[in-house]
Image (cartoon, rainbow, N blue to C red; front, side, top):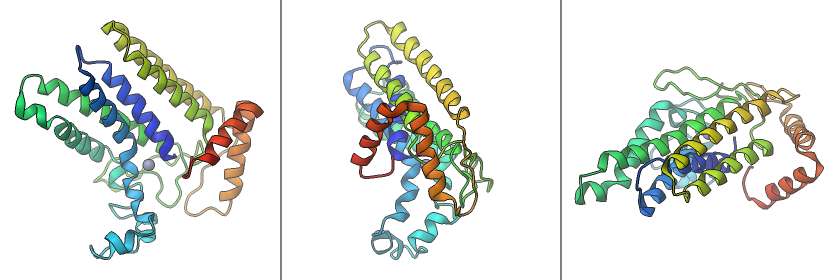
Length: 261
Ligand SMILES: [Zn+2]
């Protein structure tokens, strides 16, 4: 799925986690939010090999294969490899939780565990949301994502939705994100904990309903000759689901963003 949806889902997860600690300061809430956002985005760091300056700036210096070969390959650091695994999410969530709370660890050890867990949870939820969202896209050359790294098995690649242009899913994710962010300002701790958790679960169910309501199949493995046809069908499907007006607005937003959305 596209990085815009992944990052928004990560922020929604961060906002959910930021509402949980009792008496959290603004600075801590901000750290938790950023952790969620980073967790949602970080697995796609393995797409860096597609950057046209990759070979000159990084690849050749480290003696790596050409960037495009890395991206489309099945090396541990290829796209949908290690960085799209439970192990990587857990490892980087630990690193983020340590880095984000280092000052607290040195100055005051009290409360470190709670802060560590809050940042860890936000990053991990953002990361797992990313992995789940990537499972529902086509298998392509990877056959899914290497979710159980170091095992060499690739999972997902179900092809329920196209790689991007899933505006309906984005609207649900961003709606959930806005609600969770607004609830951070609710003074009642129990309301702040329960309502976003229930609504986020409802959003996940709604996403599942939308996915299973697709009239086309987008699954393919290897390189598809039907790539552009499938992309066109995905847009037709969005037009059908959202209606002309909302679809038009989303398409306008899509065109104003300088990367795949
Ligand atoms: Zn990804």
